Length: 408
Image 1 (cartoon, helix red, strand yellow):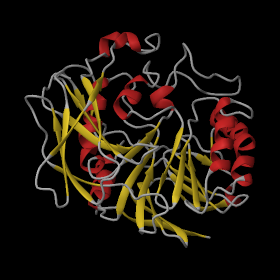
Image 2 (spheres, helix red, strand yellow; image 1 turned 180 degrees about the horizontal axis):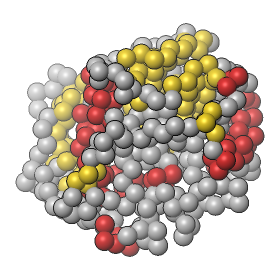
Image 3 (cartoon, one colour; image 1 turned 45 degrees about the vertical axis):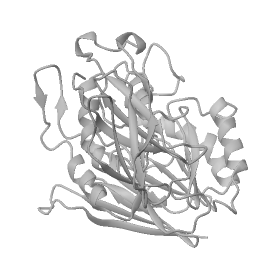
């Protein structure tokens, strides 16, 4: 990161206060600020930013390649007041450089009846790799991220985007993170963008979680979550927050979730503590799915351990919707013990042919379609629409492939 101007802006939401947090990346180490102006304000207000960075030694470099390491720059975060409502004009930067002005919409507060939609997806990546200092490789036919991002950017119903792991597919190439952050800025500077990790952000062999039946290898290319944590500043590897009438739980499928583990205990406590009068809907996400029709022996072994461990908690606490990625296609089950399972690992990553079984519980399946789920939230229902494209479509704009409603 040699650019001194502020780049790759995105906003997230404080999981406790609900306040907007503004994030950006720059090669300029000078103090960072955010200037903001709410509706009716005549003057800009200012918030100062914290800054972090990392280097090659901070990552799990036994799995990484020092030849592809690239100075990532500095990662800035500034908190805006939790009292802000509606549309907020924002610009950010350092002493010498400022970003353009973005218009961000404040989060929907808990218990609010305001109808809104949320984008849910995993396995996105970026259309165009930067592999090394001088070469750019754009894989032909492998990614359709551009059209998915374009649809989200123009979808004015969306108030939040939830990315469920396998974010940029950098896998040690920091330049890919830069490309991804730039490509997503038009979405992520309009609404809160909430991120959790997948195998390509975290898995490494010199540490981590490696049960005998698992396939948790070296998929992060030695990153072991370090770039992801610096860029997206989530509070822990797994966390939860409320947005409107929904309480969202972001699990980490790459950390121990077996019965009695720290994450399992945390999930049980989290689900039990949700006030269903404030947030009547409960949505749980994890990168890896529990119930899916695609068959691959190493993946199936993980799934066959995951559902017996976590499924009873979903049933006990009446979770309405479980959303995952990992497999690069879309699938939806009929309710299983009261919970609908949606696979949305279709946001752009390469699609490969799979073998499918256990289709008796499947309500919809689209193996060769790339897209995302729009979840419309009201007090009466969660209404999901899967928008997608496939390579047979000459019109590259996403269209509806599946629709479902969960009633209270």
